Amino acid sequence: MLDIAKSARSDKIVRCLIDLAHNFDMTAVAEGIEEAETLQLLTELGCDYGQGYFIGRPMTLEAFERWVEAGARPGQGAQG
Image 1: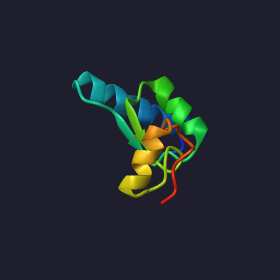
Image 2: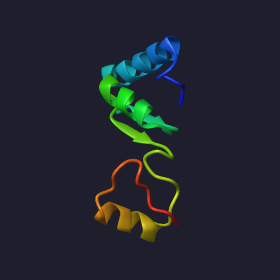
Image 3: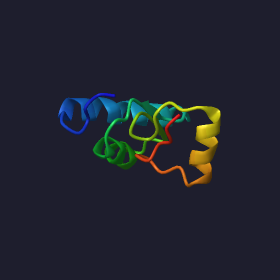
Image 4: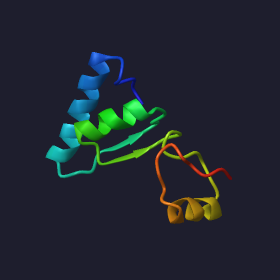
């Protein structure tokens, strides 16, 4: 993920890509989200979905199911 929290240029690129996806009736998905600030900015820019270590580290199916059942909150990823 580009460092949109610290770079105006990166912010503009990400904003354009989200708008481009939406203009073509596509879903915007960001990957590589590692910080709460980045997730917040992407949400404000209208990004539809995100993936990354901040949201949840790689985990087994069983750990994922437990995580979802427990409320699946970003930054509180299950281990395993």
